[in-house]
Amino acid sequence: MPQLRLALAQVNPVVGDIDGNLELVMEQAHAAHAAGAHVFVTPEMVLNGYPIEDLAYRRSFIERSQAAVRILGERLQKEGLGDLVVIVGHLDRARDVPDRLGVPKNAPVNAASVITGGEVVTRYDKHHLPNYGVFDEFRHFVAGDRTQIIQVHGVDIAIAICEDIWQEGPSRAAKEAEAGLLVVLNGSPYEAAKDDDRFDLCARRAVEGECAVAYANLVGGQDELVFDGDSVIVDAKGEVVARAKQFETELLVADLDLQAATAQMPEPGSRFEGLLVERTVISSDPLPAYEPVAGSVAERWDDLGERWQAIVLGLRDYVEKNGFTSVLLGMSGGIDSTLVASIACDALGPDRVFGVSNPSEWSTEHSRSDAADQAERTGLDLRTIPIAPIFDAYQDVLHLDGIAEENLQARVRAVIWMGLSNQENHLVLACGNKSELATGYSTIYGDAVGGYAPIKDVPKTVVWELAKWRNAWAESRGETPPIPPNTISKEPSAELRPGQRDSDSLPPYPILDGILDAYVERDLGSADVVAEGFDAALVEKVVTLVDRAEYKRRQYPPGPKISKRNFGRDRRVPITSRWREKL
Image (cartoon, rainbow, N blue to C red; front, side, top):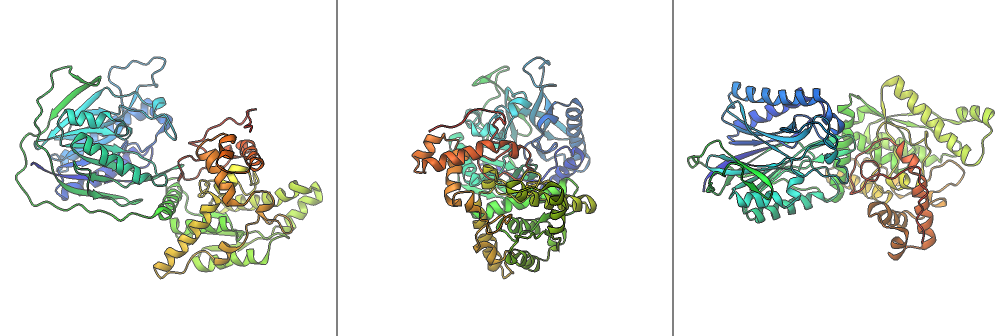
């Protein structure tokens, strides 16, 4: 069987930085060539970053992307990499599609160009444009209408892009073309346990197509999305040949023994399942036999480890890619801010993390001491600014009471954080969790202020699990646990009035999170939630809280998506609505 050495570039591009992304691809192409690779594959839209959203419509952006592809081919040839077959993801324009109503402006396509010998020899345009969850590709792109098969060293290689492999067409097309390899360029965002689904999918498509499958994925954070990498190569039996690390850049190299090309060239205009079939022969002669290299298979993180690494990477890239140098957060000594502080230290290093303790008349001593304990454990910078004098000055004028008085304390703290942010150029982190965000248990323009919210997609029960996991991970490595044990064990409280507890306003978090999972994550109606065993009155209360808090969520900062359905990109409901769930 013909041999082929394949290199997948699991890289972290920046949206809009076409020149920088081009350098990233060139750097990896040199590494692939030095490793003896014959075919080099990048992730989806690597030259532009992903997702590009409405940037797809801009003619200047499309033309710069097209120019980058040409420059890439020229540089590959000039820098001695002309014999490498490069399959690169980028933005382009559809062929012969006029601007008209119903077609995205300037007819953009999500493309993969095949480059060798300094030239683009063919191009594949993504067929299936997802329009669910976080994806709006049907809005942004024109669907491709061609199936591309390239022949390299006597092996036929089929090409697909991300969503295409989630449909049955590409594996059937690969089998029909008698391809030995199906290459898939991906921009597949992270969500909990998705790596298992992706691997099962690749294995199934390999068996269906009777060919090896190479799945190259992005890594890195982009606004609310986190790409976890986890690129993989499986053989025709669906068994792992090589698998990249999660949440890290890597060049994955592996040798494959593949089925020799046997299919005839298609007749001009021939189609498979409605798609034009094009085959491009780059080289038909198999390579002389050589000693193969074994592909590496990286260890996987466990469920909580995955979530931790996703949040850390999301925060790090949001800070770095947006030009911030440090972060600042209010540290109350509670579990949420303590967890966020630990995440920030892992993401940026403690020298770039600044905490502010703002004790009030109702702050407990252990809240102050727990914040100081964490600063000691991690090395982050902590300062204390009591809010009582400022609060009293406001009250001398406003004379607020009840909830308004409580919320005033939170807003005084927010003014301090934002003032320090402006003065010292820190990015303020909001520390609210998903359970609070769902029910509106936060103060708008108070603890909800900030530029990024690391745990906004983490339910409260998982907040505690992550805190325990992080401490256990530290202990396993002989390090000081970053989270004070007292913070994990004490009952949560906003501490805005004497003796206040979260349970005064919300049901116990295990019950609350169960209801929220049904209503928010799985989109069940009230009656269906009750049918799962929850108290009807409690369900009605929680559902009402969720529905009424939409206006708050719209004004909350972005944060990394780690669940199947986050607030923001996934769950989109109107603020102004009279629909109410009824039992």
